[in-house]
Length: 107
Ligand SMILES: [Zn+2]
Image 1 (cartoon, helix red, strand yellow):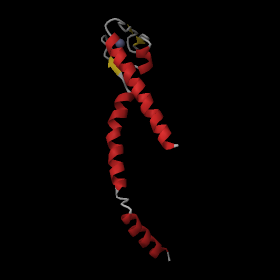
Image 2 (cartoon, rainbow, N blue to C red):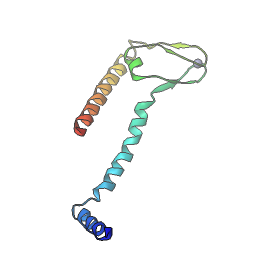
Image 3 (spheres, rainbow, N blue to C red):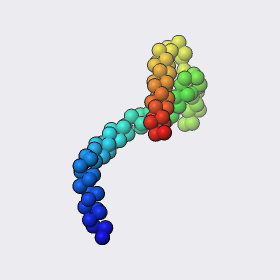
């Protein structure tokens, strides 16, 4: 009994071009690397090489980073890093905007 329904559903779905779903999956895969880059900003300690994860907020607030490997404290040179911090700030604003657009789209 369910067979005829399944067949009709299948042809109706074909009629509406539901094959776009595979396109959506491809889009999702393409998004993954961007997220991973945004997730783990950081650098290697100049003294011991320990990977230090630096959050975007810490950078934007010029917070010092403490190495958990050797205890070295890395401070951000505010003058030298000003332009890169500014571009990071713009990036963060862009990310926030993209996120709110996404949320609005879901409602
Ligand atoms: Zn270190």
